[in-house]
Length: 296
Image (cartoon, rainbow, N blue to C red; front, side, top):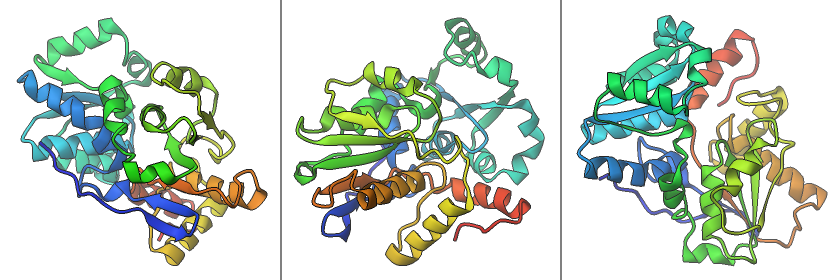
């Protein structure tokens, strides 16, 4: 089984700390490790042939699943959104990394990819990949949430507010379930829309949480010069890298919340650094093509 490294929180000032969960494993980073932990245990207990999952061009989950499969000597399959990507793997750091880890990449049209949760489509995949254990896109299911509940420790009970980035909702669901009723959990969605609330409610036991939906910077994987400048300044000041899709947007929102008073300056705040740093290389390729400032 994969082993994690236990790390102490890093304080940026007396009231704001970061939990560096991105450093718990050298290749399976942060919340992706947490989400995979019990899924991998279940897969191994069933003595399956391999793992099959879903993701897009720069998916952290695809990269993490491929890395976990390599370490456990377990075959992996990634169903990738967008058949046009098949001829561009060499120019895509995430997909190239996954393939180099041994993952078989199956590229499908977006219209087909939309069926990723349809029982009929999943059954068809099971016919093609017999005895493979299927993990959903982003890794979010009940086993993933069980893993994410382990992010918080007894030491973290001293914080008033706990913040995290939100993709599919699994990580924040785990944090909500593991938090004290007196703590507030704030999620910063990387995607537009309110659909996440319904998804999160399916898994949580408490109502001590809210989503701040104004920090997506235009949508999933969208950035602007303001966000890139913030990321670069943050790394230079604190020697902590942020990723452009998730954690940079969360930290930007936290800083703005403290500055505006929406987060009381006396509140003890813990930000969960969930990882995603593998996506920086791909984002820099996009920024370079657009002749924009790159992430340091």
